Length: 429
Image 1: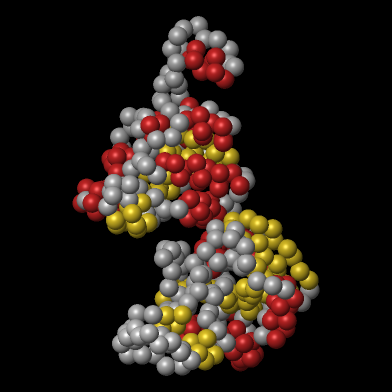
Image 2: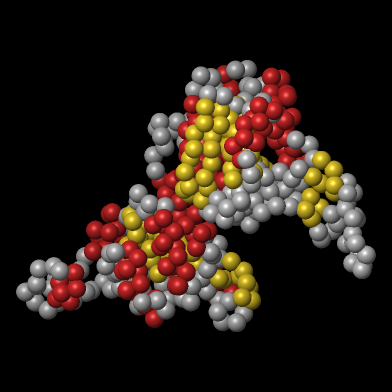
């Protein structure tokens, strides 16, 4: 469990911060809310106080007598008491400073070292990682001053959750709306995962080469239409990020996704199942493990129209044919691959999940398969959390519902066990 300072600044997206707070708590974190004066005009501090069960910080200076009466502290000798220096204590205690929503004003303060309220002072005082979720009008976001401030913060190591596109409170349509709470919580988990020591040591996978696939594949019907699925790439990205944090050399092959991929050694972007097959086969030689977390399409149109198929009143028939099975092909040729990598697959199912996964592991000659029920909204495709069963020849482990970042850690713990009896790939040839 980590202590997170949730900064809330004055934007219409402030109401979403309540859901962000809940999401962080559901993942076992403790939250202290820090609100700017403007934020309190959108959401009352009592709301966050009720949720966090902590005093909500709204000012650098708080009348000591009021604080004593409200929180049962000893009565002060004077009305104002001494200067409130909570920001120093909190700055040392928190594992993450998350600001959602983060307005152009707060971004400007952070970038230019202005400390005229509690939140901006906390930013300067803490050494904890900082994650910002911007929210503002489209033109404000695109303004050169705001862009320069964002670039300054990126250069300092500040992380961001990209704002979404759509209908804004001002009536405009464009980029600038606060990201969805689940995305913000997932991003916070990724930052926290990157700052925690890894099991077995911070470089427990040093020297290992890991190939990870993520996201969906899109199979084009014509110039504008395609067959695809709802995979967001979150699970594969979390695995790649965790493997890189443990010291592995990571190659990530990803299908189309709106999420920003983690920093890895080699990033390969593909669109179709055929392209992913080619990229994986090209990269698999010499790696220690292949983790196939991508939701690769099983079928692709037999023929792709050169342009857009004109709409008519008649039914449209599209003939689909099987795509190449990447995992099966890897399993069949593993003995011929340099390094003979450990193979990890995923089984996304909606019924008889574990039974089907067991059969798939045997059929495709996998060392481990991750059974994943994608029928529920809080796990599987496009969710920030997951619940899986890890199946190997030696047994099964149920990983209960938790963030995909933590699930990634459990998966890699098991991968490390599978690799423990093997020398690194570079030493085997």
